[in-house]
Length: 382
Image 1 (cartoon, rainbow, N blue to C red):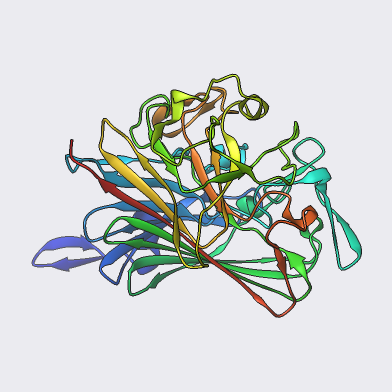
Image 2 (image 1 turned 180 degrees about the horizontal axis):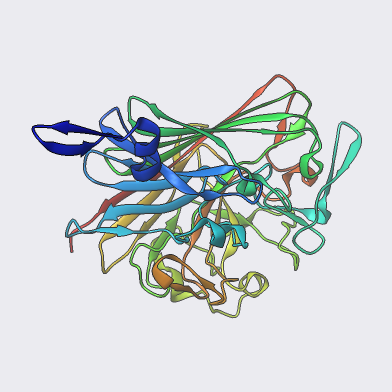
């Protein structure tokens, strides 16, 4: 439709058409958000891309498929923004299969041995998708769900609230689990993730976030300097299932109590490193209470970027992209080879449902699961 004003024809774009062409915009707190179409699922479900921008120009892009963080742009020491997470430009690439790039993981992050556990005297058999074990929620975990999404305002910044109902029996887990994930992008470049869930039957829950970080954009992350606030870790067997032991990191290749380059010891002749092909281990966070506690701090010498990880959870999985093999081409055609990115997945310990000595992951009927993790970004001068 057009109208004539002072002899000039002007197009009148209806709201629906405007949204389809340009996306929708909103302002929340001190930041702003934008919504646009990212693609459609094979069954026709719409997948939207939400761009959250803070008052300082930092940007996070999230899709409601898997709650995936598609990109996260933070400044280096010179103020130049750069994307610090691995991912893809198109939905089709995510649908083809990927190693959980940027996704929300559930119902149970990490591994459950032999894909089964017993709760209240009943054995539950899960989908085995990692040899004989269940990994990251099974074949169709939370990373493959289309979540309901709603931009929101908090006192800390612009936010995106995602919700999903996991039906009783999904991937073998008991109970209808109603889950809400809130991403908040703050003006001081912190990505806060608040997890909440309720169930109508006793079940087990261990939710986490699975971004692969690379603070420099270099081909690998071996020069990143890592510090993990953990005196102990949970050693694993050949299937990467914890043995149940809480072992001291002192004198081992897994000692990150002081800052050390990720690549400094990654190829040492160490049994645990050989089992994982590098670092793929749960660290027991040193904590005095259940408050937010710093789990890790990573610095990148060339760009000056710093990432701190704070969490209310008892553990953090440090993974160095050991199974990336160069077969995936990501954003801008980047080839993701071995150790192109690292993960710091805050969590309860792997296989906790089968390890009564570990902190419990049982969520009782009518109770509420809550946890918070914050990825805080900054830059240091030389």
